[in-house]
Length: 442
Image 1 (cartoon, rainbow, N blue to C red):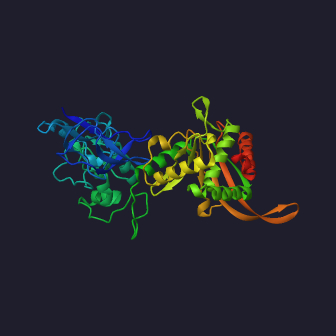
Image 2: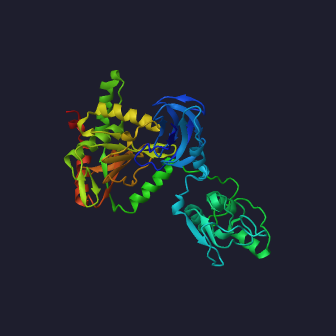
Image 3: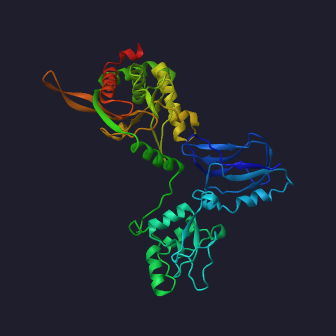
């Protein structure tokens, strides 16, 4: 019996996936659990496995294609089984448009300029009507996908003048892009005035942007970058941020780190500054449980352990592997776990449970020479700590100017969960523990 292979939801926040590589070809025999494909999700590259055994009868998308979660991407079955119904059923939805098409029942129609009502199908263009940027708009209602409509509006295009290549003449993303590449709204206007098709022109991104110039390059967003964009909008708008900054004397903490690494040298474990920051944050959260919390509709959810997310830069964006129960672990264990998580994060090999569910996050840009910055909260967490570089700075002690190794940190707080005094008390504890760190190894 034929079995559908669909784009699986491989992470909690995944909405679409990009096919990196098929691990099989049509005609191959596979068993349950065999890897069929490698897929780029919003956070990592992961495998899609066969849910049952059989012969690979059809592979419906190509490497580089992006499709929604749940979309049919392949078919398994018996060697001589007729799977044409499944395969043909997937063809009307152009996989090249899969990332922007919506269910047929939800498609939109745009009434043509003459206001004439028509049936559900778009009227065919008259014999002398131009296609794409032609002179005459179609009459009746024009079938158009939501994304194509938005693209046309942004580019100032008349959707009724664009010939649709989708099922039933439906105007899809590629049709609008072709119209933009042919000169956009200006070309439509010229064609309408002259009664002739507009000449081909150099591609322009949209009418709202400046004209394309030599050296311009359009970089398609990765699945991770798309998710980052969506998550940031969800955070910076709805979440009421406020920020608290303090400066910490790191002299004793750095001396402790040096002594620990000398003691641990035989084991191969090396404690980094970030490991100290994670451990101190976990200890401070244990003393201030009101910070180790998140907003949950009409309640504040406090968490029983300090699960610290570490922001890691990767080529396509940012990912936050999580050190679980950091408040119950020693520095050496945190250093070992964090090193492994960060390495696998950079190689896109983390499992979903390893980069989700943090209760507090740390973002450190000190290695890039940044003194201080503010970070955006990753919901549903209530706070994130932005860490700048440790640098020698002049300070006044006992009426004299001395040089000390200082570090600035800024905590972004969700005001629905954390009040100013509460956040300040947490940072006071955090600073005190870094400036007197011996209790961390006691």
